[in-house]
Image 1 (tube, rainbow, N blue to C red):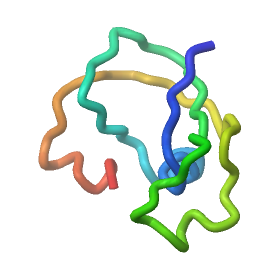
Image 2 (image 1 turned 30 degrees about the vertical axis):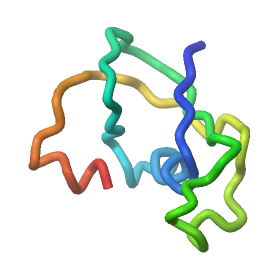
Image 3 (image 1 turned 180 degrees about the horizontal axis):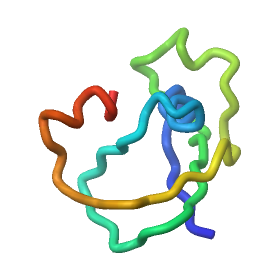
Image 4 (image 1 turned 180 degrees about the vertical axis):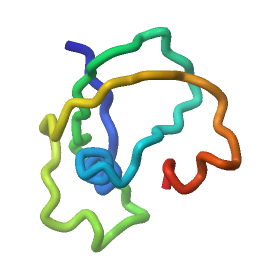
Length: 79
């Protein structure tokens, strides 16, 4: 299974369904289920929001259904 590493607290937001769009500088042709891996390093700008969240583990699986340029209408879903 393919996996995507995401820093906390964003990995947890994806697992909870609060973050439904992930923004990357690269594209993927992969469609289907992937694992979301909580990176071993949290997002240092998020400080207290990362406290107690798991690091270095798979936190959920998600399905990639599309890969496209980010639109302004996507901003809330991308947090």
